[in-house]
Length: 164
Ligand SMILES: [Zn+2]
Image (cartoon, rainbow, N blue to C red):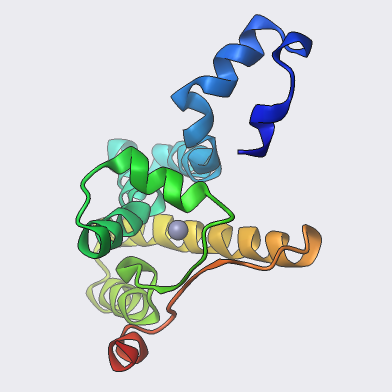
């Protein structure tokens, strides 16, 4: 990582701890975590502890990154998988993140609408929140940070299947 070259002397003890701790590694997920906590708090007066269901697809949906890595690399290490995704220099195109495909999203939202099931509605709000954040982050990287994305994923499961 680029930051490793910064001399340690300019940093305080907390920064040293932060720099090498696993805390920093999971900081990327903080936006999803934080937004889910806020959403759960907002929904709490209406749905009580069922509001926690927002975490299923609002936060743990990214588990599909790990699933894809297990299948493609045959490695089970969650931290290796996470570091691979955080490494912006690593080029990997057309990944299949199954819960981020249009098919899964449309099917889940349709099921929610048709069934009108309250639990599914709460889970779906988490899903929509997650997708909005993912989308904003991508726009931020492309438009503001002017980065060329080296890691991409397939939008459609069916088209991915046809390509592989
Ligand atoms: Zn995501």
